[in-house]
Image (cartoon, rainbow, N blue to C red; front, top):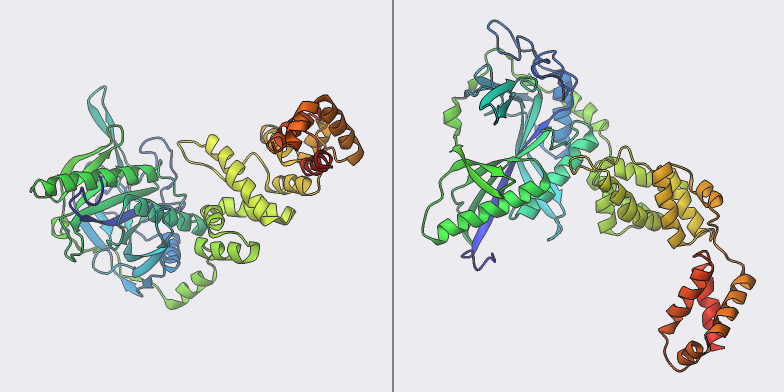
Length: 487
């Protein structure tokens, strides 16, 4: 549906992203925070909310939170306070969540995105606060029963809240991709949306184009991929536009995304802050973050995606698009640089990585998630493959076959070329002799070419490459053939 068909509504989107921190233990106790344990194995009286227990803050989680604040250019508050967020669900055993409310540890940051359908945008980050995760309800449709797994209860989270600066599902997905890239570069979260270590809620509303007041928003949950975020927002925009165009009102509520049916559906009425009855957490002192601690963390920050992207353009002469793709994943960026270190041809290696390496990673993806940390081809081997092309040892076409063998066997490209006899034929005398024989066998085609049918050049090249089993140097073939046909 076009903007005009929607009644000239402008989409307004704000995201609340929960990032599960990659600490060894939970936020307020010593239980393991690892994913995948047997149900309720990683629990203790603290994360089970037993009477008489006291929380103790995880220092490592706090340092990870500082990293995120610095990477998103946030103002870090020297003093912040913990709050109790009161609500009851079976997966929240204390009947409250320890979070931050009026005084979060940081606020007012920015994130630059490069959406595929638009220009570079700076999205404002309203705040980031620390909190503990809830457990997980497991529903068994066959038996009609429900179970609760509290392994996740107490795992440290950052909630990153954007201002309502996004205007499309594509922009929202670009924001999430960049945010995930940043937390992975920082090594504070694995960003695995399928396992719930990064989760997103989208607040969506519509307003008449050109107006400043916001419309009534809905919050959509249960989106576990970038594609789901785009689809859910697109559906919600169409649903709200249909209601508004029919003269109906939008109800403020929380909705769930049903990926199988491609629709959002009502979950519950949207809570406001007063519904949670926030009050200061009595068992925890205010969080004090000394400037010296912040300065140390800042000095230890790795090169972040935006910095690396700019360096790839400046140092390697890559187009902006290449640099954006290559730096989206820290593992992929490291792979690319290792390949360039093995053979300095940045653009050629970029082409191979974007076309072939990423293809292989996607083919081997688990749950649609490409893994660039365990690629079947070594970076140094890819550099050597490009070096064989540049040195004239093999042609680009042969290199494609060699690359496939590298994926299958893990062997060095030079070993494969030698073992399978794939060395490119560059002997001018041999190639000239083959050309002479083919031209002599096709006098009518030669006459047609000389009569103006230039496209027949490809016909002769095909015959020559077939005769040499694809090993003839293409550049040399084209030069010698053109000279003989026009001579």
